Image (cartoon, rainbow, N blue to C red; front, side, top):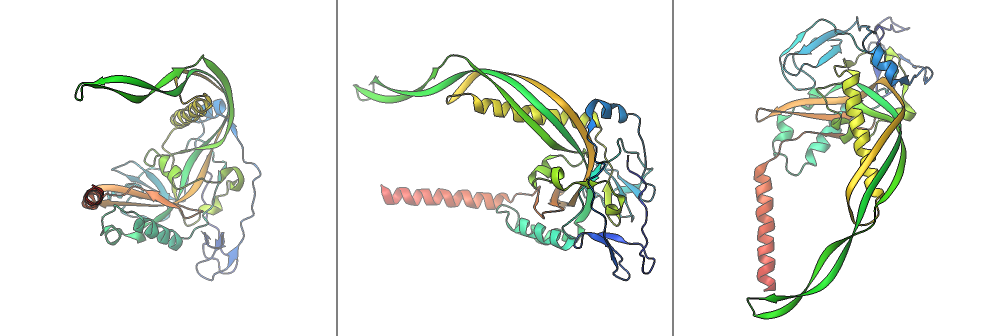
Length: 359
């Protein structure tokens, strides 16, 4: 799996270098010398899923140059260069150094950071200001300096989809009918909508999922990745190179491949079902059935760049994620119910005034 995370020495002064997101190069913090990391996509392997499930039970390697901290609250494990007291993923201070846990499968690629920590903080602050119903003091009570860059282990899945579906389509129709109004003791007419059911229909849907992403951490659900936008693994992924990790934290995967694939399969099934239902003619349908067949199943383990901030507000934990290449921010936020109430009252007042004017 992950090979040894080593130290690269500056060719000018001999100090340890680190990867800098701004220059996207190795840089010496002592003398400022820079060194390119050769861009390569050679050797990125899509592993047959069945084979990978077997390897997940056998192959084990370590990250010997990093300390491994384990959060006693959420269980997240982070390989890092420095010891600290707070967890990146839940904000708990119950973090202790633990024995290194091996990872399941050798990583195939990495998307390096392109957004600096300062840019990530600015994106986070902009995101906070855009939240209409967030508490007014949220920005003041959030330590933006605690935003940390972490390489997130992520499973990718490829799958060819063949699905056969069938359903009975329905079409909305209207008709005018006469009814007796007992209050006025007279006959009146009204327009009603009904569904006209057509004959059964069927069809075939084919698709290809290329690098469907599933978070490798149980402590950071995949929805956080979806909220901050796409990671261009199909075009920008680089062959695994530990030099990109120098100076950065690395989260160790704790979501086993079978669990990740179960999540990925549910996503594929849900997306395919939605596509098939869209293909049913008419306005509605009933008795929908779908047979799903998958082939060409492959997977790989990659590392994606994110900035994460775990904070607490009102004794509740919240997490914000910033995309490490685009700067898009998203995540959890508390809601000020006072602001919600004021908005409801304002809308009610406006409707009342409009009614008064129009009556």
